[in-house]
Length: 317
Image (tube, rainbow, N blue to C red):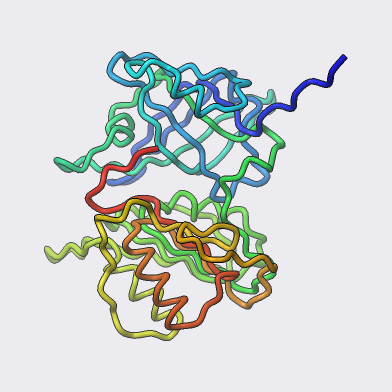
């Protein structure tokens, strides 16, 4: 009898909303539950794990992707467009598993509700109610070969995390999983002062919340609070212009293991004193990458730069 084909590392499951909590002016925290979540997610190593959420489309029907499909994405594309819904990438704020094994995924959504700025994910989150269903594509429990985790500090003595509100949930998850003797700095840029959320960071991590709305009628654009703080951390005092290339077809994504630009990836382990993990708006991330790598000589083995979205562009997938 031939051996059974191994299950794919990702599973597509249907989850239901169990709780909706407006935790700040810009964030809504949604707890997802359901029997199908029992064998997905790795609470012992979540970090910045990326998962896919598929929101129901105009028909309201949930996209049913075969759970054991070897190519879940291809299976999703085979669903009629009217029922396929919209897919977006998110990170997990927390995984809770109770004594019975029931699993709950907690996701923090950023609410972009200004006219012209609301996408399908933000709109869904703003209207979500208990009992609503959606499809989740996440790693199977115990599988660490699915990819989607970029945080890899190696033997670095100090950690530097930086990002805007879209990266805040991943930064928070990373901080709460770090060893309690970890040291470093986290820079988190958010729209309003009320968006400073609780993070159980190690005592040796300095968490700095940077607010764009200054309270005097001045509202900074994305990156104007974050960039100077990160560059000052490495000794630079000038504020460079933010790189903004709306014609770019891809988001910046440069890690020691992968380069969107085609650069030769660093293969040796990170043994440097500092490790940088930077994510958020692509122009801001690109600006920081240019200065840290070009002007400060920080090697690629020390950094992960990830553009989660681009200003003025409706992202897909």
